Structure formats: C-alpha cells, structure tokens
Length: 116
Image (cartoon, rainbow, N blue to C red; front, side):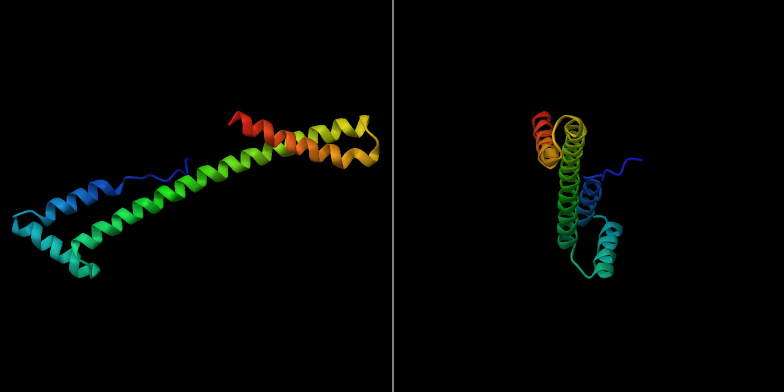
C-alpha cells in the first residue's frame, strides 16, 4: 500500500469555489452563501485555507522523503559497521574491535551519502 499523500486535490475545489463566487446564477450565489454561513468565513478566506492546507501537505511529503533518506543512511552505516566488526573480530585484537566497528559505520554512511 502506498502511503504517499496526494497533493493538489484541492485545486478543482478551489477553482469551483471561485467560479461559483463570481457566477451570476442565483443558485450558485446561494450555495456560496450557505458555505459562508456554515463555516463562518467568507469565500476568500475559505480559498486561502485550502491554499494553506496544500502547503502543509507538501511540507509533510518533503519531511517523509527526508526521513526516508536518513533511514537509508543509517541502514548502510549499520550494515557496513557490522560487516567490518565481524571481519575485525577475526583479524584485529579485541581492544581495537570498537574502533573498527565505528570506522565501518562511518564508512557505510559515507558510501550511502555518495550514492544518493
């Protein structure tokens, strides 16, 4: 299942509200008046709220993409750190094992950073 948020869903609604607000048809003006009464806001404020909702959704999407990038860096760092740690376990003395794991972690993050 794709958890990506959909942006620009409000644009057809905003365009429809704008068309209805300037429409000479009495039923359209009554619909806008009902919307304004229900929300307690004028039509321009409703459209501005829809704009701010769209900006918020875009910011959330960017944050999700950024955290995905961080997780990938962490995964590569942990993978290389554990791989270097296993190899160092057999090759290096016990005292230098922590240093080897730390260097492997940093190496893994730098490799992932270069790949992205």
